[in-house]
Structure formats: C-alpha cells, structure tokens
Image 1 (spheres, rainbow, N blue to C red):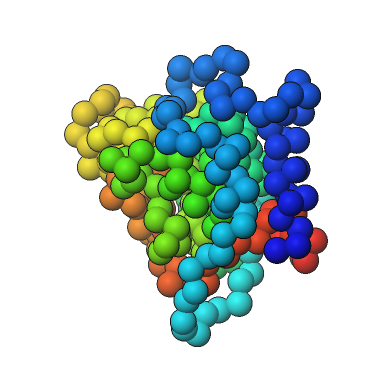
Image 2: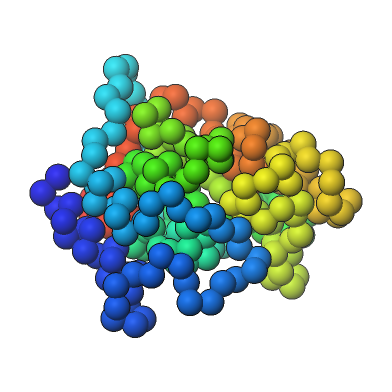
Length: 251
C-alpha cells in the first residue's frame, strides 16, 4: 500500500489537468446523452477511503491472473473508456488511463465475437473491462442505496474486479457510428434491462444481436444491464486491485 498516496495524487491530477484546479464534483458542461447521479458523498472524499481499504479476503484455489490488453490482442476492438474521463454516471475521472484488460481466455473469446460481428457489418466498442477493486468501492459508496442494484457490492467484489466482465456496445463498420440501443450506457433505469420491451425495434434488435454473439462465446448478460457481460470462468479468478500502470509494468 506504500504507493497509494502517489496514485491518489495521480488521479486527482488527471481529473484537473485541463484547468489546474481541484477536481470538480460535476463537469462544467453536462452531456445530456450521459446518465448522471448525485453522489451520496463527494468522489474526492471517497477516493482516499477506497485506496486505503482492503478487498475482501477469499479462500480458494484461484488461477493466476493473466490480464491482456484488448487493443493489443485485437486492434480492431475500439475503446470508449468512460471512467477515464468525465462522461460517466459520477461525472469525474475514476481511471488514470483509458485502457481495457480482460483475463486471457475472456479476451480471446471477445476477439472471436468481434470477428463474428464483422461479418454482420458491426464492430465492438468497449467501455470497460477489468476494474480495480478500489473503484468498485467508490461506485458503491457514491451511489444512493435505492440504486445499488446497478453497482457491485465491494464486500463481495465484482466480476469486473476479476477481469472477467466487459461493458460494450456495437458500432457500424461502414460509418463508424455507434448503434442505437434501448438505453444509454450506465443508465440506472428499467430501459437498461436486457429484457426491456420498450424503445425502437431497431434498438432492441441491436441489443439482442450483441447478446447472441456474446453468449455464443461463453459470456452471460447481467440481468440489469444489456451492456454488461460476464465470462463463464469468472469464479476461477481472484478479486484484483492492481492499477493499470502496474499491469503494464509487469508485462
């Protein structure tokens, strides 16, 4: 834990690099396409608490973590890492780098999904993969209790923490345009449910195609979020709390 204060500083610097001030709790301009909540406590106050906390202890025989950077494995996968900027439900950067990792079997399965979708004329746009545990704690502590079904309980850990969950959507290969879906990413509403029957027929068709392709390669959709998929081997990996910078340093 010796490096936590330095990392806390790096995140705060990343959040404020453009203006040299303390990180705002809300962005100066609000993107109406991004769902936002009012944090229970300021994110800047939650960060040092999360960094100082320890993930839950787990007993068991786990596989060694083998996190792979998605764009290194398959450069055709596009990224839109919302938690590395302000376009997320908390309105402030939570990651210091816009990168995405998965455990190797999950990453290779996702590359197969991408290739199958290319035959349909679509590509994959990834919003998130492996997530350090301290960020999961921040999400939980910042979110009102009546919305906790949309965020993972840090006492249990997240499948994102294990490197076996991915948040993603589709884009059109010809135009590069992100496809319409029944809800926006990270929207805390019933429209985000995979079985939601509202919205346009095209949006539901896009959502269902993504689900079919992902399920073919061993992923399962989360019951409250059409964009969130868990890989079948998630139980085989421990909860992780390593920073993105440290993954790069050890590979």
